[in-house]
Image (cartoon, rainbow, N blue to C red; front, side, top):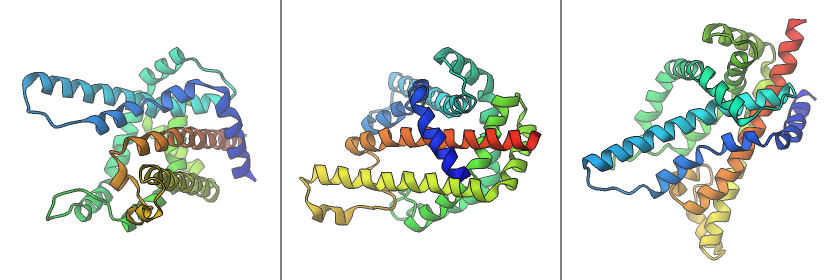
Length: 263
């Protein structure tokens, strides 16, 4: 029942706050840059331009990374937030969010090294995650609740990293089964949408020739379609909606469980 209420409240409320769509869609710049990036002869002007694009991409990514959870939390407490307020929150909390991300990377570093070691083709030196490993990594959506609860602790209480992570862990463990199902469930929704986007893309571009679907990597479509503009457009639109939807669902979960624990 809790999961149903979180998802229902999320779906009902994300349409009331248009600001969340702006910040959710900011990474689109990175997708466009990657698709249209071409190899040029290295010289000083192109190197400076490339560095500028990397810097802009990083700023947009951080703005989305912090802005979407912040707006989602504001939605859960029925607070309307403007673009200016969101930018102020990004400026205030981005350091803590980056620090929390670095802590997560350090803890996950053995797993990252393992994935890299088995995903690099020794003959071609190309990086491609095998489907079995890709599916295995999806199970880490079990910990989505822990991640979002840590961020919401910053927004709700202005806590530091240590205090927020500690409180988030306590809440996460106390409601593990519900939060695990919520994390895995929203991840499965995204995977299903990714597969549907790939099927639609290949079908349109092949003139709806069903034989062309045989070469499609249905488990991880981005492995072969990452530079396909049509796939990126179809997938990204759905991704931004699902991302805002799932983040807001966790915000409602945080609000309910943190209030229940404080009583």
